[in-house]
Image 1 (cartoon, helix red, strand yellow):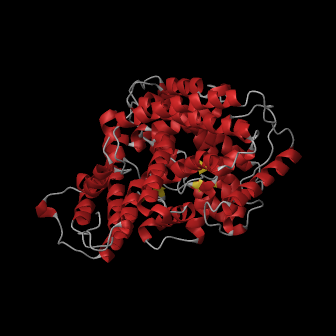
Image 2 (tube, one colour):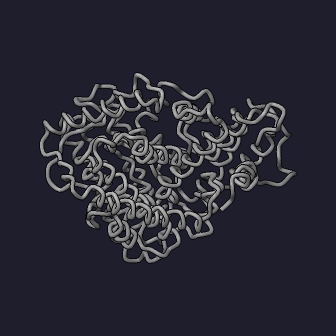
Length: 545
């Protein structure tokens, strides 16, 4: 694995990997940052599919035309010379290049419009906790979680329009889906059936005989018909679904801008899995004479303990000077408390119902999302979500990292058995990450990845037949490296913290580090490292590029 110096060198060279094109075809050189931001605006419009009769066009002809035009955008980016810019603007240049590489990878390898039926699921009842929805999805998402009922007339009209595209999109999908990836196909059937159930739930909340209710009914009928069509074709799908080891490494290094290979990540995830299990057993031994954590058993207890958990966590962050507190943080966490659910529990509920403070640390996600609205980044390139989930290492890595970091900082000192939950979480993240890696190496099927994650998650809290185990592994099959981003991002942030503390010596404070990390935005951690290194460089020394 590259050392720190090699990482800096690699980050500065990544752009050259994907931004090709012949010298003769390149436009005139520019060294103006304004030309980058103008290109970025054009690029984002180009990346979106054109509309065909109001429906996003993913036909083979449309995708071929888009791929043919992509090198022109890459050449235009390569013609913009950022070497004399401040490092933050150089980073922006690399981010645009990474997005272009992401579209290149989509066309060369993933081809979700042709291989993945779940790509065409566009109705979502719940909010993602990261800047953009995880995985590849067709344009035109209908985000039901934004709605309150009864709907206003304007929202009802808007929702009816959104639902109105579903039948046309699914009809087009039957022409577009020519791939042979069996696990993607079979998993997609399940996702499409879930969309039907979500539409049925929506229909029950709408005014009968209204235009939006009619649109929901048509969308559900089209969804059911699409599911039947997928099932009729499933027996013929026998091919692999993973991208392969070499392409996985290319994706890591050229889209997510990480200095790792597939093999590096396997070694790191195996180490994290072993560390988590060993630390859990040692903690259980240390705590063996303590009573078990009490499990929440009623709605009243749920409301009381979850609200108290938010108060405790925010007080800890403030009093221990961990992170600058903003007014929106309290509301961001309390809005996610939810309702008590009796009966069988999924994995994260097993953790949550034993100590609600634990997963409030992971709720750093909601701080991030609120910050993007309340404190938008000054760079237009970083202001919104990066495409292709390029934000995942920073978003998932910090949310996951806060769990163990806050444990080490003392958050659970008064409840030693809560520390055990941190290691249960760590083991689950490492197990599912290995599932991601081995599915894309085509060494695991989706079912084998689910079984592996279940078997290596402690306490039987991730059953093979549960929703969580299947949903996570299917996401990681669709979106290479997402499953590893939780712990790889955490590792990167821990390294960044160590380097920053060494650079600053006695001047280092955790609160300033976290503020600087937040200020950098939702970008890959190696690029944040470049900015941090530049800010620490002596004025008379060249800054890293």
